[in-house]
Length: 366
Image (tube, rainbow, N blue to C red; front, side):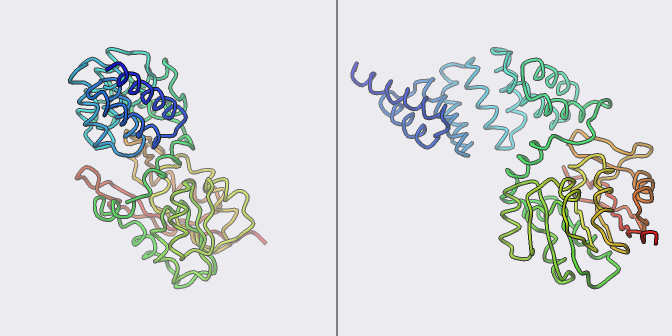
């Protein structure tokens, strides 16, 4: 028995070393070997569950962590990992209960408070979310992420733009299954509406801003001699390139790209992109820089209630008002051809009010 214990201990310690170094497949192997020698040990079950979570197997992780908690119901580490696994599985209410219990035992976890804030926000518990964000900030969580989240659940102090790493990681994780989710779950038709509203059959060069996986490309390619795309997410850019419909796809922040590219376009399209941008002044200035006189700039927005120009919603998506666009367009050298309201997508069984706008770049003075 002592020899078995020592061997299990050696596997366990090797697993910890692999986990801490980010070698999760090796950690999975060694924790599994340790567990086979000494079954049902809570510490091994917890670490194996955490490893399976890192490997993208949240269902297996949840089962292992629940086994650990049957023996140690107040194990804060197991509860925290279980909350994360349940959150990935879309089981928000039990995930929130698990992270509440975890924080009751170990209240100094900034990551735990941030997860609690996120879950409470997604469940509409905005007061709890706000307090959890404050606690997350006090316990060392990412300050930019916390302030962004707090801006979504409180009326004051919403930032003008999201943290870049938040948007990048969000869409890197969303890339697989992105199009099916938009079409089948959200009933999203933004590209069809925008391209259907164009007033010219052909364009010399089009730029798909925030192109994602390339949903707009099949509609734009037949109408553009040249078609480029730009997106912040590396995974999205890979998917867009694999379509083979773009002449070039660049991984970059769209405002930064508009500010430095040497290319000029006569069509700019941004479908469901500005909800992750925030204030649009830098976008419009960059668009005016790269768009040829007479060129078209079209985009969709979530509709904000007047008189608010810019609102960060609890969904952590920005909404903009029609009045904001009507003011911003001429200030940046655009003529507003038309702006119309219609549903943008379905979210939680409800239609999300949207705005679709088509602008023309005014002729430059002689």
